[in-house]
Length: 284
Length: 284
Image 1: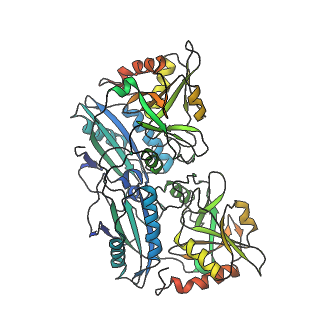
Image 2: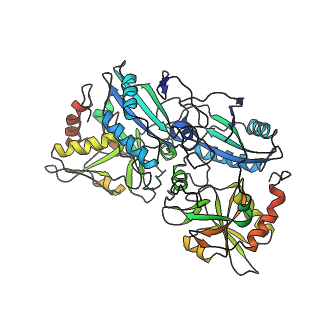
Image 3: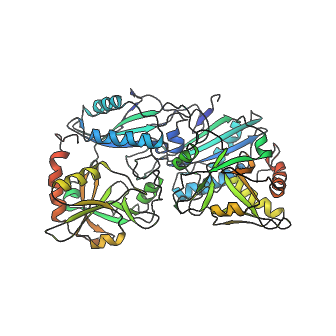
């Protein structure tokens, strides 16, 4: 990967304190923002989620206008890029878990858009079920926080990369998400399909694209709900797809070797999202 | 706090990559080592736990002899100090959760020994039960990893500092530990006391002092076990105490306002540990 560009607290380069609580404890939040045509996509939704996360974790929230300007500046020169925003509680004022009047740290990191097989969005992806599960904690559920060891272990269980993504269950055995994606199931008769995605009340991330898809499905006339789902629901689904802020929608073409058809509802939603995901995409 | 001294990858000062996976994901492990008389206490046990943790997380383990020398060097000039060893997967070679051939990062950070009321070890500490619980995940249980948001939230629920420590339950409601300590319960008749501490198979940290106390209790003729415990077991305990690598044993004198006596078993174990915890303490 060519070297990413980094701004720390708004300064190009800049240095990171080895006492930063982000490093010591994963005491922070992040957003991964797809940028097209020199503009960050869904920036408003990303910053709103970040603000809510800061409030829930008691993190010092950097000013949103400053963040917004820094992200836009990072995005502007390139046709396509990924901008990661990372916000931590900052350098610790004391040892241990108690926080004080720490000044937060915020990093803007611009990565090149990854090279990727364009067939994934058309023909679909292969998915496996991870053995590593997600611990349940309503205090952290929904947040895109920096405690990601569970996803790391799940992602790296199988280094063959035969699967494009791994689905994760909660400790209790509910279906939750992929390691870096949310998951949607299509069910019901072909003339009246319904969409469902696991709720993220106990674990999992409330993804930006998940939210956009829930909204757009309803606008498309497809009932969509968040609910408690189980692995067996995957067997009953006529279509399954994954979402994240960069990829939009990836149809799933196999789960643990069992083939799935890439179906009409997934295609309808991909088409509906297309204008939102392009360079001229609205900031919804 | 006076500024801690930091060595990164063995170099005084040194700089930390803003791409370090420790910062982005809490993708690392740490050890908090009490140093007395210029020597790190229980260094062998700390490094053993670190090695096991690296193996479980697939972290590139730095050479133990190098680590050991660096920690000893950091400890040597001071009568008392805390040395924190932090090992991460290092600067990411690519975006996302997949790891590659990352070169790990290791930090040795020397903090001054904290000022503390010496009465805590004599008269005991006040403990509350935290509302924040610990998610269960056998893949991470026992490790002193850098995903510590749960402990941070629990510690900071009550900013009055009326309690010295907070006890945490698992998501399922079992008793697990304090935010920065392990917990022991004394039960049975006075002439035949028994010791128990929560197992750490689903969550919690396998503390170094916890291990030392389990070993020393048996040598003292007190049966000691790790088992599944519940909050109600605290009500049935004749004595409760907390342990960690720095404090040794803290008797508990109240839980959520209910008074407890600091009893004879706790005192016997404190006395038994005393020679091990002093400056001449054996590296067990």
